[in-house]
Each structure stands twice: as structure tokens, then as C-alpha cells.
Picture (cartoon, rainbow, N blue to C red):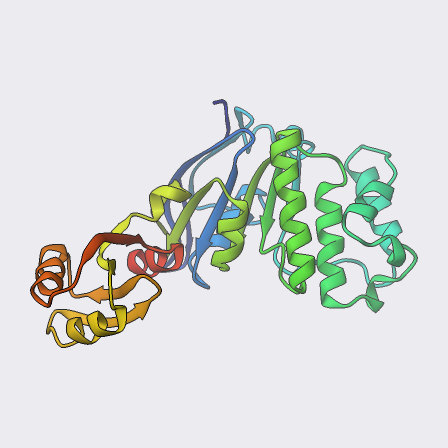
Length: 299
């Protein structure tokens, strides 16, 4: 698949502080890539460098096969950007903000579809100064999508939105990728949002890329978390709970849910059979994305 964005050794230093450390990454056209990391991991700095809002210390950025520095205006006309906590002129109306953005982008287009998509039709005549935080965030999203960009770069786009608003934004972004082929880079610290929206996840920790995989690859089987399918679950849980290598054991429907100190399938089976239980299966569980994230970003 064609590459939309390529980063090579992207680095940002603030004095002695290394905010982003030699980040190399490719994003395919039509892909939704989630940038996941703790606060201060380098997500917003990376996005700022992609948009030339932050000057990088070193490294190379190519977007649409073009060098970002040499072809910035050409690239910018095909991008939509939402920075963290977007700011607007307080005295302008919502509609005027969008019309000015369209004119500055060289695209004299109506803001009506963006207002509708961002659920801001009712607020089109309101001044920015009267908007709530959630409505300001919706205005930022409307501005980012207004010119029908090929690439959307979004920094915490659901910040300030309620549950239903978040759900609507995620559904809309997924449709843009699936139906129109828009490439989306989506920064968040919310695991559920990343799991819902993204095809691939890049995890940053202290400025370094520590993982970048398809979602399923980030959730491997965990042999220390096992569901033992057996009869008499309550009695089986009590039996296994006495073993020193069992961290927790609880009856769960057709068996026992176990947390072990390591891979212990043979010991679990032997203990249950030795206790007179009928065992029909031992099923490992997958790590959650949160489990994996905590594992690769542990101090």
C-alpha cells in the first residue's frame, strides 16, 4: 500500500531535554494510526513537528512523497489539523471562523457540511467566546475537515466531549477512512478510543517509539491468565486458590478464572484432575491493550 507519511529519525530537544528521540515511522494511505502515550510521552510534540508548528531538531518528514520543508504549502493544502486545545478569535462567529479558514486555504467553500458533521449547525451564529469547551473542540474538528483533506492529523480530538459526542466523532472518522480513504493520525491517551478507531497503534514512551503494530498483534496470548473449564467451579476455585503459584482464582460460569505467577497449564490440569474434577479445557486469555501499554511503558 502507498505510503502517505514517512518519518526518519525525527528528533526534538528542548535544551537538555529530549522530547522526541529519533522517531522513524511510516503511515499508509487510508490507514488510521493511533499515537498512544502517557502525558509527556512526545505525542503533541510529534504532531506539532508534522505541522511545522514546532521546529524539529533533526530528522526528515515526507508527506505524500514530498519533503515537508521544501513543499510545505503544497502539503498543507491537502492536510487537516487539530492541535490540542485549539484557539480561535473570540469575537468571531463559528460560521465566520470556518469561512475565513476556507479562504485562507484557497478554497472558497461553504462551511455548511462541516457544521452539520460536527453538530454545530445550531451554533453557527454564536461567537467563539460564548462556546463551551466541548463546542470549541467540535469547532476544531469542523475546521480540520472543512477542506476535505487527504490527511487528518488530530491531537486529542475528543477532549472535552461527552460520551455520545466522542462516539459520534469516532464513528465519523472511521467512515472517512473506510469510505473516502482519508489517512488519519490520531493522538490519544484513552485506550478505548484507540481500540475503537485505529488500524495500527504506535506507543511512545519518554519520546521513544516502543511499539508499532496492528492492534491484534499488541494483544498476545497471556499464558499466566487462564480460564480452566471444569465441573463444580466453586469447589475448583477453592482448591486452586490454595496453590502457592495461583495469584487469584474465582468461579466464573463454566469454570475458574485464574491469575498465575507464570505459564502453569500442566500444574493447573494436574491439580484439578488430582482433586477429582472433570477438565474440558484450559484457555489462555489475551492481554488487553491497556495491559500491553503498561508493560511496554513501565519504568
